[in-house]
Image 1 (spheres, one colour):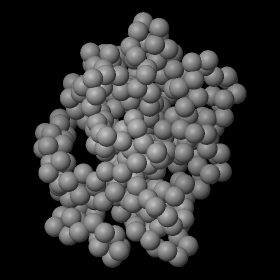
Image 2 (cartoon, one colour):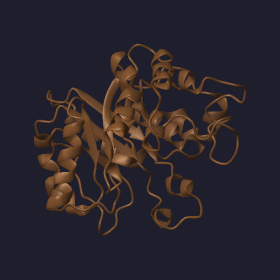
Image 3 (tube, one colour):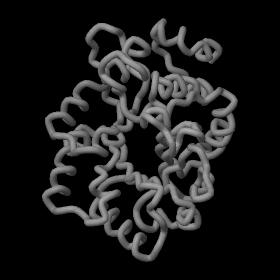
Image 4 (spheres, rainbow, N blue to C red):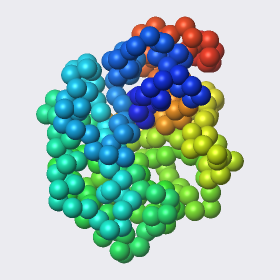
Length: 279
């Protein structure tokens, strides 16, 4: 469990984690983050592939039991024109050091809300998953036309990603369990309904702090689901990143799941989120 990304942004300012979660002094943010969490979702790879040297550095700076999930480059999920063999090789070579270090949890394929289920898009999805057949895969589908297809994900080599976000008429409806699945992937995007599609700054969309009582139904459901011996890995990430709200909610949920964070939380962080004191 952890957050979607670990650096928002690298300097002080609105929404920054610096001075809230991270110290004001120069800090190895990933190393600091890994004191508190055992996994992180790499967000930067959605915008551009990582270099092998960068991925090797990530692996070396984290504990042996730390895992990375990797958000797949948008070239594969958002570009209808497809991709080249060179781009595919570039992406795979960029994450190879994580796999070699046995720290690659799985790949996350996040499709846009406009990606609707049709025979053509289903074929496209199958083809994409096939070229990544050697990796564990989770697929985030947002349009409700995919609702009845979620049960089929296992047959095409992936699991569905369950998402908490504002629900609109076209939003997918989900239940966080797929019979027989060996992995579970859950993402929290926040519930900023009024800012989801209309916002001045993209960060406004995710500027939301879940209350403990909003997390509790998930905790109850997760405890039930995880009693199923089929599930061997469960990944839970918070993407409501402004002001390190994702960190606060990940700490809250760990406590509610009876796997609390043991490291002492930064004083400024606890002052900003007094909800953590009772956790």
